[in-house]
Image 1: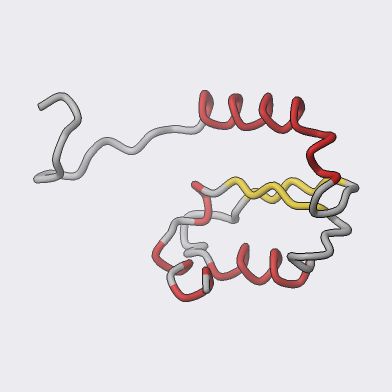
Image 2: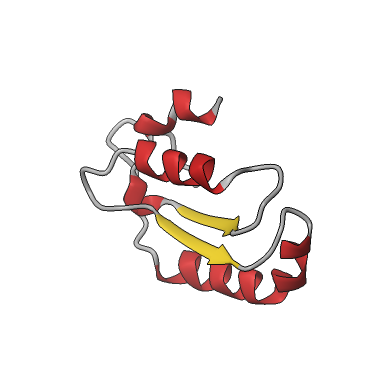
Length: 88
């Protein structure tokens, strides 16, 4: 269950893509997950598409563009002291 560990994740570092008419993942479940993240630094970003669980694939190009922009513009936290580095 994703809600079990959501509080360990900073909400301001989360981008969720959701379908308004999802037959598998109800809107209430998506909203509950967004609220369950650690909101001490901000809210999770939820992008809603007028689609169902499968028909959201029709929006794949704009979604990929949005995700690329999100990662390009979101500030990356520096590694914590003692954390392993990829450069090693």
